[in-house]
Image (cartoon, rainbow, N blue to C red; front, side, top):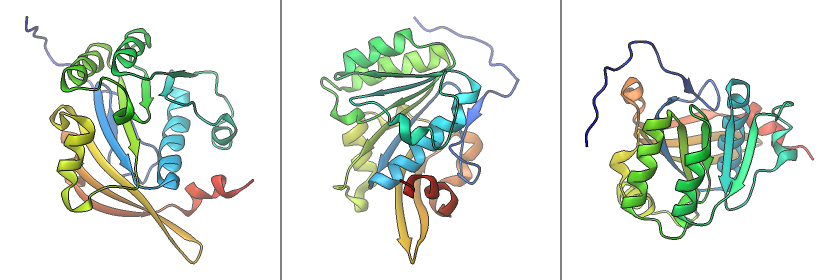
Length: 212
């Protein structure tokens, strides 16, 4: 049964991994992110966690947990960080049912979960809406067809139409300088102008990860 409500006129919470990022992820928003290299994944996810930790609970859901040693390079207080492992879409739905409303949730390796389907993604979307989550479903792959990114997202995320944001993130380096190269396929309405390609210098963001 459809339920109707009057949208609030106040500005909702939103987060960015860092200031120069071309869009923000809104409360009650779902983002799908594909990384083509490990540095891109590390820079984006760990800066996203670090900037979110001071503003409520952050849940990191794998297979596999976050590196606390790496995160401590960006944030001292990790008291609002929670980590858990799931291995199927059913387990992910169960986990999202118990996270605190309004939380930031990062799910890694989403396309690798068992029993992933369009129906399960609709259940996930419903929980994002009901609980006001900021949910990022991510994946890392070196085998990405850059000539058919919409097709790649449909294969990896089943129903890309349910997402507020769809991003491909890469890094490149030249003579010791680093850039994050993004393709934004879909963005929240407030950031629709960010759709397209971006190249952002990230030397200061990468530096903490290059130290032993």
